[in-house]
Amino acid sequence: MADWKDNLPQAAKTYLEGRRLDEVECIVSDLPGIARGKAVPASKFAKQDYFHLPDSIFYQTITGDWGEAADEEEGFIEKDMILRPDFTTATAAPWTGDWTLQVIHDAEDRNGNPIACSPRNVLKRVVDLYAERGLKAVVAPEMEFFIVAPNIDPAHEIKPMMGRSGRPAAARQAYSMTAVDEFGPVIDDIYDFAEAQGFEIDGITQEGGAGQLEINLLHGDPVKLADEVFYFKRLIREAALRHNAFATFMAKPIAEEPGSAMHIHHSILDIKTGENIFSGPQGGETDAFYNFIGGLQKHMPSAIAVQAPYVNSYRRYVKDNAAPINLAWARDNRTTGIRVPLSGPKARRVENRLAGMDCNPYLAIAASLACGLLGMMNETRPDKQFKGDAYAGDSEIPQVLGDALDLFDEATELHQVLGPEFARVYSIVKRAEYDEFLQVISPWEREHLLMNV
Image (cartoon, rainbow, N blue to C red; front, side, top):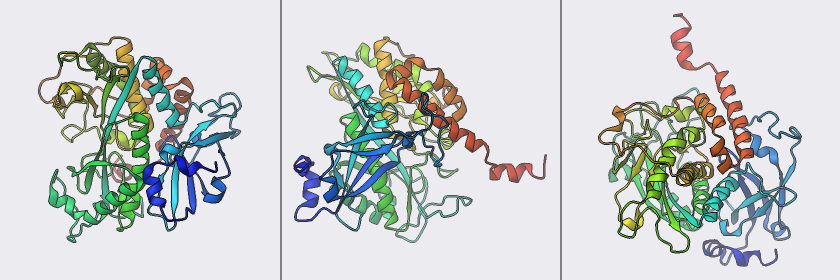
């Protein structure tokens, strides 16, 4: 790989201009979305085309335990995978003390086949299924998160961070520029890091929660946007740490505050013409548009376990708290789970508002696109457009992770799109996490049951 630097994106070349590269972080996303990999001296990285990691990283739970016998044929033997760099993902790690690049790698087995349970490969599989039908998926994710005070003891509640005014961040200040200014130093670092990494932010706004912000990204290729969300989570955490704060992507970190979502906007293009297939020649809504919505309505309950992957995720789905409780759809209505934003025909898109920010971005986007694809393949018709406040309706989504996993396990049609092996391993890992959670006695139980039952 003597000439590998010639293949770097321009932002990475600019970052290194006139400087000596010290280290390369070779990374891959595991199921929770944590970056796993190796830090390699730049001189060594230049001499190798790939490196190895055990496939067990995809069997690991969020707590560091392992899904039992996740390899169905051979058991838990931790076979080596081959990880190959995707140089289009090379980007700076501007918070480090030396000159470091991050490079996302693709996971293969020894025969060159994609590792089925690698999240990036799952999304690539879904994107390829669109391409086989002459279609190109386009997405735009929105990232909500909280900047909070350092929380060292898990027994203590999470508190909003102290703003530059010396007062804790206030709630119910959505879209307030004054509230955004409270986090000015953190936001400045987010912008600086993003610029060094070559990422374009479409906007930052204050959301309804105390210390809650939203970053919007420009629409584009699903894999590229998932890569950016994957990178952004680390970027934002590092910016917060510089100012004695934590950034959290928990779906519901503070009981009295709204949760954090990763809304996903979708449009689908005809590869030959480049036209948005959700709009007809006269600008009207097409069958594909309605079928995509129908697919989300029919299959999303089975995909919730991927878009809401933890027990905490389900605390976000609360009436009148900026999170959906059902799969109703409507135009320009933020109370529904599926929203059609205001736009012209060329920009017509469908917004899935169910995914939490605690999701793995590769898997959440893959699952959402998979549901829409099944709807178009099966010509699924949606319910009638909802009129009014959707919070007045009944809940149509699972209320706890265990129920969501039961629905996921039964969804064989969805498994065929995401990959049966991925579905099998994902269920094993998530059930291991859920079983571990059920062993924990909560403060609520100690407070109300200890002396009263």
